[in-house]
Amino acid sequence: MKYQNNFCGLQMRAYGTLIGMLFASAIYAEDLPSGEVVASGAEAVSAVPAAAPAVPATVAAGGSAQLVESCFACHGTNGNNTEADVPNIASYSAFYLTGSLKKFKEKLRPCVETEIRSGDKKGSKTDMCQIAAGLSDSDIAQLGDYFAAQTFVPALQTFDAELANKGKVIQEKKCSTCHDKDGALPGDNAGILAGQKIDYLRQQVKFFKEGKRPMHKRMKPKLEALDESEVEAVVNFFASKV
Image (cartoon, rainbow, N blue to C red; front, side):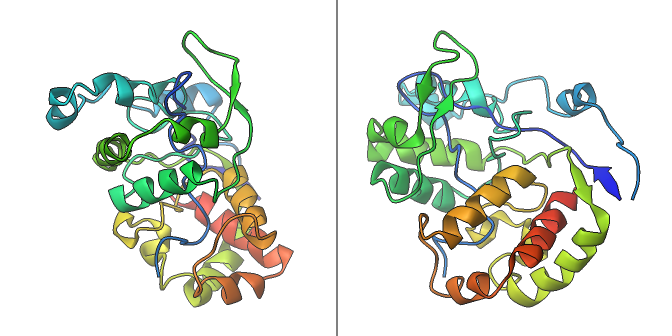
């Protein structure tokens, strides 16, 4: 049985600064220890708040409002959008966001080529390693603080209810130590998995299993013990959360 749950995606930065955190979320922490479709794409868009949140005073005062706004082309003004391949990053902890950007800057995470989604450079190709390379430590800190202060909107998407039920059991046994409350807590410093894009979650698990993305030592044996059907159950579970 297929359901849809709240599908809002993120929009990446315009050319030369930050696509945001295109690959900032993951199915597991690396920095820390049968129904009908319920909403159309148009309804999914309406679920994202229309008004842009104000750029924090500390950012504006530092003259870096343009830096933050450069992320909006793909990640959206509040870290939520309707791009299926771009994770929602609103509410991610500043610790997780800054850690992810630093890993991109050091090319420790896969940097998949993508298109800039809007703005003057719409359609241009770039990747997170290119973007993060131009960021200073101060830039990274300000971006982390901004998106951490926003509100996460779960993605509206189709998921398999039977698999999600199986995934719930696996998540509770294997993942809940680092991804408490079904992966919904920013304070876990492990991204937000509850309501995250299902295709994005699948991609990141693949990177982990292929050794392309670093894993925390506590995560590695647990993930490696899961077969493909179990992984699919877990990602459907996270996709089912609203």
